[in-house]
Length: 93
Image (tube, rainbow, N blue to C red; front, top):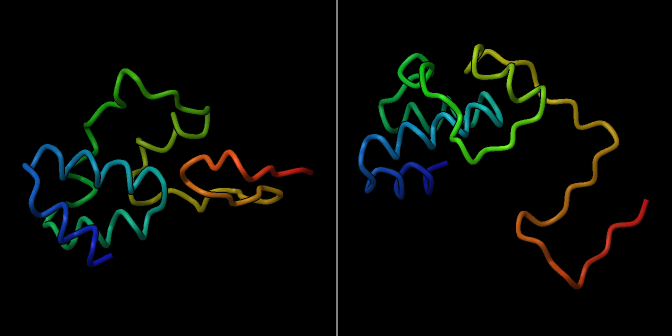
């Protein structure tokens, strides 16, 4: 958490707000904690719209209306892999 706050504190406020919005979209606690470190609340970013280039799932389209108060994501049956594709790793199910 400290690393996110430290690095984002070097960015302009609009970048900080967008990142807090993304973190809140992904996971409430992450977004709240990073936002707290930057002095940004869910209410501060609630009016931000998704970026035009974002391809949101049906679930993701509902989450902005409840930033900071969304239920945990259902990850049942999902396999966590690298955030960056690793062409040497193949996940089979």
